[in-house]
Length: 237
Image (cartoon, rainbow, N blue to C red):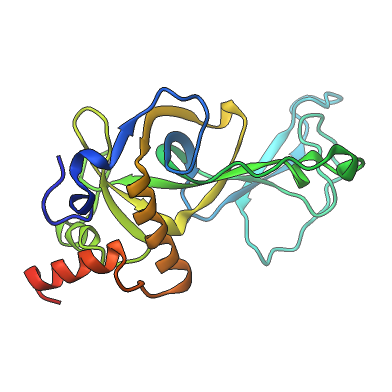
């Protein structure tokens, strides 16, 4: 159930999420995917020795923070499973499987004749997703957010955050981070379908929020402008 002071109430609580059995993904499809913790310092792995002399499949690794201004040091220790090309490093991030909303998908495949001789990764199609973060505290597993902050997000005071209730049993409050927009692969191993998607009206509001974040300002007579006017009339600025 959605409270009265959220933008979902503008279109109607039963017109925000809808169940879907489609296997194809579209803008507004809710999936599960591993999303890295954006604010962390990544780590790099550097082979520094052999686990056993003469074995090229195993190595002893040094783990160190990966800095953008670090000087890359080429290694002369070949490891079969850790081949690197010039300018490359092995990077590791902590990640968590989160509900993610698809905002961009369906990029056309590039003609194979145009990519012959280049790595597949250079033109492989991707999808753009934004992750959800749980809004409420959950023991030692999740710190959540302050209720005062959650309320301000629910009132659409920030372009980068969207308050929501995910359509699963228990209806957990969550915050969508549009400023954590990131690519995932289109292979089915990269995500898991949830069985839900946003309605067309909800996608329109999502696009207004995204436009607000990218370009600044909210258009007059938009869903967001209408909602913000109601909030200011009820709660004040």
